[in-house]
Image (cartoon, rainbow, N blue to C red):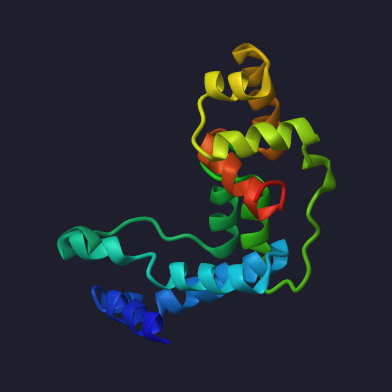
Length: 176
């Protein structure tokens, strides 16, 4: 696969990262598989993961070679969960990534996060770039009602931004 070669070249930036992009690609695909995504999505996620480090080339090697903290797998998982609890990442998807890193073959998604049809419709409008006012106008409701729905959507999906809610909605099949 040509992107595997690109990932390998990206990893050459720092000798101690040899094979890192391949490992990230494998982990991302396994986490997506555990999450239940369809095969075409797995392929696209794998491709994106292979080139995730492309921006690394713009950072000076001097900075990369500066000593910093190293974490065990369990410490890294704990830190990832901590960041998710602060709203930086989706907690349930982080759990799938951690499960994939541990080599687990099955993962249960909680069913309590599903949205009502109205919430799905609002999330779909938002995912197309509509503002709260535009959604309100399109659905014949007030902007404050849309805002309340969005707060509920964020809470149910464990997200803190429109982009993360959109991604979660897409991965769960709540919007298309």
